[in-house]
Image (cartoon, rainbow, N blue to C red; front, side, top):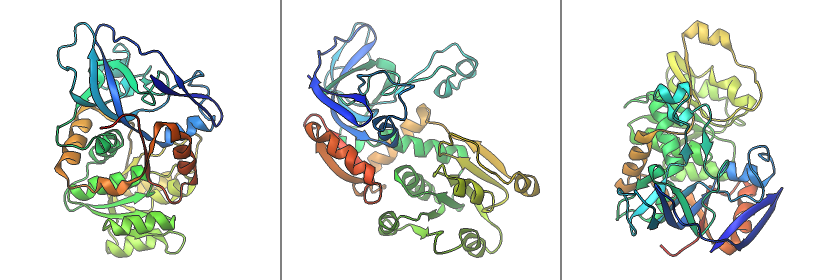
Length: 340
């Protein structure tokens, strides 16, 4: 079979690899589509060499069809359409014992610490599989993982019908958060500076604010008649986002940190005290978030087709990474490994 190997900064090699027989409790998936996400791009740029061993197979956003099953697998059979919840937890640490295995102290993320989905056939533990409905296009099945991120964020933020929500950052995850929030009945404003993403968000019916042109705090204050937003999502991982996020919520409003901050940034803690704000971290997802994502994708109420910028065949995966690097005019790039 063919697989894509990361061999160091900006180096990808497409080569043959032996198909692995699924062992006890394992399933082999014939991969249909796999998405390139921000994490894959970080690996491609050499920024995560401390977590990956070269040559490495990336990829964790995917869909496919079960091709073979190992001994003791009873819940899935060849022909089943599936996606993967790509988390391997230890089951023994305090987080796991408290029921939070998705943030296991020793969590392994498939496609980072273990081989991922950029290969024609992928062997994974049975317990990572999630069944996809027959009427869900497998292209959209490859969006379930990032959509589950958004579902988790919305749940952590406790978004309710009628809430005023602000999403700081209109990239793929920010856009999905905005769409899921709207489907929950919230009124949403997305703060974004990229002209292409602003146009796309507006085409999706989203209200936008470009903070380079309009003061975001004043905009939200006026829009809410001085009350402030119910829930604010920071998705940019930027100093500017961290600085403005405390200015936007109402008294006892919620702030959810979605972006990954790799170093400390200034945060107005006095504002937390003054308005009794609540701050939540939101990392990956749990089983119920995958269930919700599959339900939303199958319902057809989210315009998932508009989020797919390009689909490349496996032998053009480098083009997909290069397009993702441009940032400005791209939302989601998929790699097709087999005909759906």
